Each structure stands twice: as structure tokens, then as C-alpha cells.
Length: 308
Ligand SMILES: CC(C)(COP(=O)(O)OP(=O)(O)OC[C@H]1O[C@@H](n2cnc3c(N)ncnc32)[C@H](O)[C@@H]1OP(=O)(O)O)[C@@H](O)C(=O)NCCC(=O)NCCS
Image (cartoon, rainbow, N blue to C red; front, side, top):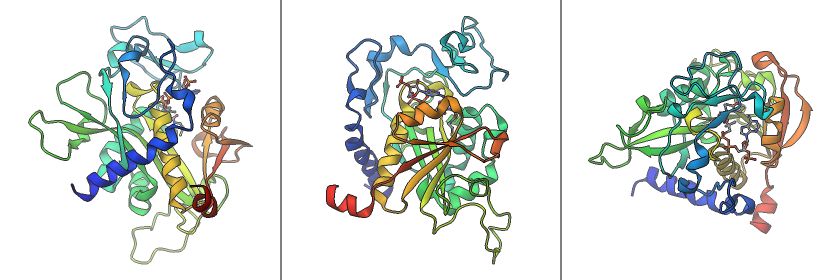
């Protein structure tokens, strides 16, 4: 077993105790309830996973509903601006066994593809340059959630083309496909700032100027710049599992005091359910503004040492 395999197993094992903190997530026996345990068998959810609401699609974005023209904008659910991902575009394997590992700069093509697929508003996407900067400067803060997929089965997700064979070359050609990611960097501010969302243009120079832009190694706040799940996989608890795995990993790392992010109003309750606190309207103007500041306090080193 090589180092990479070991780190994948470790990351997965670390996510297990965290799931226990959300015991209600395990009650999948009730019809209509969701189970976010990982790995998990999604057989029980097959029937209700037919239509996935992708709440983050812009209402006016061009969405090809294809043959599933019965799919409509999700206004009836009261979730304005939400777009239903048509059946034909959902990825429907019976079993999902996703696993996490830190992203590296070699994952950039898949990360860019996922970013473009998940954020329908181009102003809210991180550019390739920004992603390259973050994966180079602070990839230890960036986590990917992968699924092993055999080519030729089901639909091909957007990140499929940039995926690589799984650890051992299998005869069926299975590849490891990125289906979710958290891209982050550190800042010295307690909340997200426009400067923390930016990056210094000369960062690759031999002697770059000192800058308040972008990743600050001495910062104690981890800013989550992008939390994204491929549209075909949304609405099945993958985003929650990814976030819980990330929070668990950062809680144990001792490298920061808190996580921070900015969210649109419709996403505030999503993060509150993950124990983030709503800190009110954010002055950030990134992507046109209108954000709310969210923050989650990580355990202190003392608390970790005392209570685990
Ligand atoms: C936000 C995102 C990562 C969530 O991933 P996901 O896999 O669809 O989310 P989950 O299935 O884990 O959702 C868990 C819960 O959150 C709810 N939820 C998901 N997205 C939501 C949204 N935009 N608004 C309100 N609730 C939302 C789900 O309904 C579910 O609630 P329930 O447990 O009460 O049924 C995903 O929708 C995405 O990639 N969106 C595009 C990018 C984006 O907007 N990212 C967030 C800003 S950085």
C-alpha cells in the first residue's frame, strides 16, 4: 500500500466518528428520510432520487431539459431559482462509495470542470488561475470527494474526461472521478474578505511582493472559497458528507481556529444545519455581493487534547 492509498483510507476513517454526531442522518429506514453514512448503499433511495433539485442554478441559465421536459423550475417547492436536474442527466448507480483525499495541483482539470458545472453563474466561479494558485499554495486545505466509475456505464459526469485510473490498473478500466470538492485558503481576518478571495498576480515571481491578497500562511481562519458537488450527484447527501469530512479533518489538524465562508441567503440554513453560525450580511462584493458571513469554530488544541 503506498502513501496515497494510506491517506485515502485515513481520510475516510476520520470521517466516520463525525457522522456519529448526526445520528438523525442514519435514520434511513423511514420513507423519505436520507442517510448520509459513507460509504452507503443508495438502493433504498433509488425511487426518491429520481429528481434532484439543484438549488444553485440561475433561473435564466440555459438548461437543456432534453427528453425530460416534465422537469420544471422548482418554483412549486418555494425554492426560487432552483432548477430541477432532469432524470436523463442524473447519475444513478445503485451503490455509491465515495472517498475523500486532499487535492493536488495535478487534479486541476477535474476541479475546473467541477467548478464550471456546479456554479451556473460564471461570476461566482473561481478561475483556472485562482484554482491553480490555491492548489499550489495551500492544497492541504483543499479536499476532493471521488467515486470509482467504470467507463461505459451510466452517464458520464463533467469531470469524467479529466479522471485518472484508480490506484491499480483494473481490467475494467475503472477511473477515480471527482464528484465534490472544497477549495480553501487561510486569512488573518475572522471572516471572508474580498482580499482573501483574490490572489497576488506576481505569486510565481522569484521574489513576489508581500501582499494581503490570497492565502496567508499565518492566518487562523480557513476560508472555504468553493463548496461544490456535481449537479448529477446533488441532493443525495454528498455535500453534507463532504463538509462533515472536511470539518472533521480541520478540527483535528490544529492549523486554524475557525472555518469561514460567504453564502447566499438561500444557503444560510444549509450551513446552519452543519453548525455554522450566521454572522450577518457580508461586505464582500465578490460575484456581485449580497452574501452572508458564516463561521464555524474549530476545537482548540487544548479541547482536542482533553476531550478528543
Ligand atoms: C451546495 C451543494 C454543495 C450541496 O451539495 P448537495 O450534495 O446537493 O447537498 P446535500 O444533498 O448534502 O444537501 C443536504 C441538505 O441541504 C439541502 N440543500 C442543499 N442545497 C441547498 C440549497 N442551495 N439551499 C437550501 N438547502 C439546500 C438539501 O435539501 C438537504 O436538506 P435535507 O437534509 O433537510 O433534506 C451543491 O448543491 C452545489 O454544489 N451547489 C452549487 C455550488 C454552490 O452553490 N455551492 C455553495 C456556495 S460555495
